[in-house]
Length: 568
Ligand code: ADP
Ligand code: MG
Ligand code: ZN
Image (cartoon, rainbow, N blue to C red; front, side):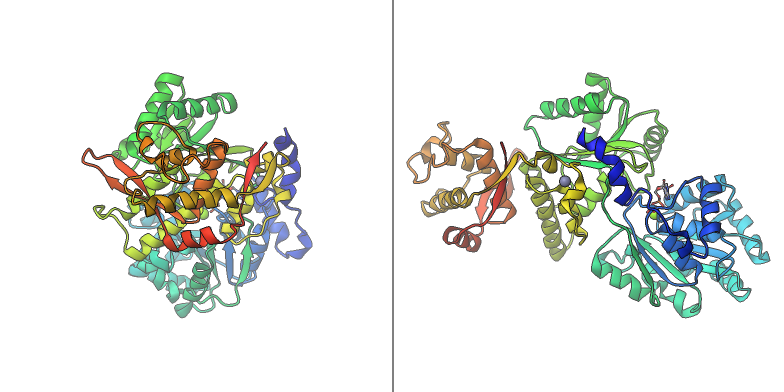
């Protein structure tokens, strides 16, 4: 297929594949490449890895932005082993996640590297072992710690001072540096990391993150007082992922059949992740995939007890079970290279989440599928969860606003049927992407040639006019999104009959069904229409249609220049 054919070419320019490196550009090239091959058993550097390694070995501060799975760890693990750098001794890694620290230290030890962790969770053995060695000045290339431990523990501080005085402190590394600042500054200790520069001004600092938010980046550089940092950015494009969005079937049973069919036809025996919204959905879907489709599926969510979680995650990562059906609680610290598909049975809450979740596919560089099932009713559900006054976990009001905005970015993405998915995703990370580079590895690019742009202004104005008529006649109360579409199309069902005299009823009778669907979705995306969810006595939520008057007026009087992709 076009997809497979383009894989090889795509690799030369892609982020997660090799790029030819001019080895004369780095005085450390020969030592670095021999460590890469000998110790890390990898064949070549990814884009910017050698540049990053070179800069830190030169004693410079580095800021490195690369997507999750981009290979940031190597950028400090490898220089930690180099003998030819300008600074020698121990590389101190500060990382917020205990499980990540644990995994990395274990993996390093398997490679024969003398790595230690100084964390509260570390078994006392390791700590007892590490401290005397560090004090004695033994060669300990890597020490991992959490920001809390680093800031609060006198022992850790003493060790740093001790190493520093003997010129055995090679560099500080701040991993997942986006945890500094922003509304996430609940990790107060991260905000205090300014002491690195204050107390040990000549020790180079490397900050790494997978979050491209401009403000966050400035925050990081400032909080750490980085000095003219070498700023490296890896593209966020994941060339080996195929992106697709499908209409989500209304019936659960049909959705399940479609998911199972997709796996059986394209991913038989492959490893994959299916994301669902709720814990019940996860359990239900995993069970039915097992029982009705004979697929090797388990569930995972935050409501399970620790042991059960550990068993399911372990079995999945070892390939004992192939498919994990999970809430977004699953994934932090997952580093399984051969995930061949990620299915979103429900849309993500924001584009960052979508990127992270789909990003768990294809870390080994092999072709992988990202399939999302989209339905407006899911949007409404997410919206109402955010705005529900009875939810005690609800964030503060301005945060709710921000999250609603983030959600509408996902809606715009999902309901876009004409633009290259990569262009849309990467735009979110402020990265310009040429759709030619997609090489038909998204659903919309595959439609190219079959897609025309059509001006839908008149039809959209018609819809807006209809809602306006409903309001004028005082009959907008209690009208749901589906009822509205039925009135517009002029359906003759019982609950629609009372509206048949209204001007605009049946105006879309001759318009293609999918077109009316698209237009209503676009109006919702543009916030001309909105929905309000109310909970009836029975506990079932109902979405009623509402309107933004200002935008509605604008919509009626102005030409609406928008186009909808149309598959011929
Ligand atoms: P990040 O911290 O950026 O999310 P990691 O450091 O965890 O990414 O690396 C993700 C995966 O990429 C790991 O499995 C790692 O072994 C692999 N990797 C890193 N660099 C290379 C490389 N040059 N060639 C092949 N695989 C690599
Ligand atoms: Mg990492
Ligand atoms: Zn594309």
